[in-house]
Amino acid sequence: MMRSRENSLSRIEKGTPTGQEKEKRSSKVNIKMSDIGQKNDERQFDQKSFSLSTTLSHPKSRQTRFCCLVIGILIAALVGSVATVGVVWVVNRGAPLEWLHDFKNEATTEIIAPPVFPSFTFFFECNENSKDGMTNNTKHCCNGLKSNCQRRLNDVVFATANNAMSSLDEHFLLPHHNFKLEYALDAGYRALILGTCWCGNEFTFCDGTCERGSRNSTEVLTSVRDFLLVNQNEVVVIHFKVYHESLLDLYHSTQSITGMQDLVYTHTGVGEQWPTMQALIKSNNRLILFQDSQEGCSDMTCPGFIHASADYISNSPTTLKSVAELENYSESCFLEKNTSSDFFLLNHFTSRPSGQVSTANSEDAKLVNAHPILFERKKKCEQKLGRKTNFLAVDFWDLGDAVIVALGSN
Image 1 (tube, helix red, strand yellow):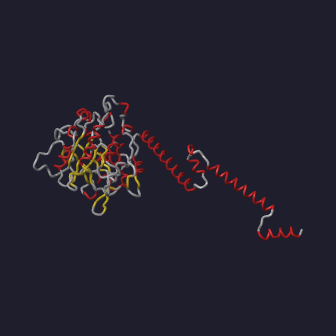
Image 2 (image 1 turned 90 degrees about the vertical axis):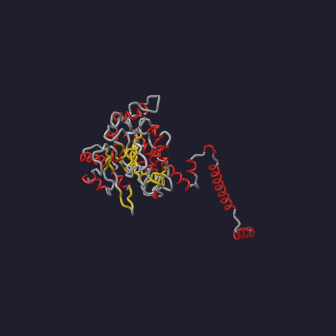
Image 3 (image 1 turned 120 degrees about the vertical axis):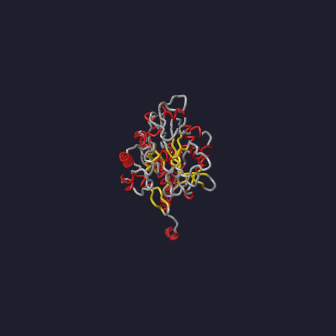
């Protein structure tokens, strides 16, 4: 008896488990083993049925769950935004284009994806259902509206992209636009203002100085030609601002583009009536060119297919520095030259000083390109001057309602 008691005491001193302790420990081991078995069972799943929900429920995937949740929210937001844009566009037949800024990374000032434009036929009067089935034309439709067809060229309003070659998309410094001019054509702009320059022994389009950027002239003119070949009921006007004594090079460049010469219209002369839109489309002379050079052609007779702006176009000031100046109609609604011309170019933008140059201002563009200010200034200037606007020129063409105001005026 004493020996048994001593053995028990000895086991206690040495940490040897008693019978009850063994049972408790065995029970704990069994519980842990069952836990492990349960966890192993949880981990055994069919790879073919692996899904996002399985990943999110895994006990060791907090970081994964968070990332997947964020991705899911972003995808849902993107899908919702695209759907909303599509519905709003169709319902409003060309709502403001501010949604395009979703494609711009504000932190890096880089375009992270090209914008995808709805076809202009969604918000123009003519659509795919009116095609004649034999060509890519639409019946009785001119620049998106049936009502345009019987109008003469100088009775039509054209949404116009000012300094259209200058864009963030094309890596210009202090750009006039976010996206390149090819997208502007797709969005309904039918007139472009381009500056001609010599940059690095190459004839280009720039904003008067090569340091801010330039675009290859052949590339741009080819894009315009291709647009007209695809959209055979559209008429496009280009105004060339000639810098660096590049007038002759402009003539040579336009003549070097295969097929472009066939599309160009040559007017019969100053004071003569301009043809109707339908006549231009029927004859396939759907590209009208103007140039503002003062240098003349020196050793040659200027070809008539690029018309002198001074003979045909009057314009409002281009030096307005603020929204307040633009809305001061007594100062902003006057003609700088040629008050009896066939066409009126309304320059509807501000240019703010930035060092030694003036720059386009996107914040101002958000305001002045919106329908209320744009429509009101157009109306006030027309009343004051007693003539109709033909070219409604804006910076940052993807902001606001220039296309809508132009369509509503035709």
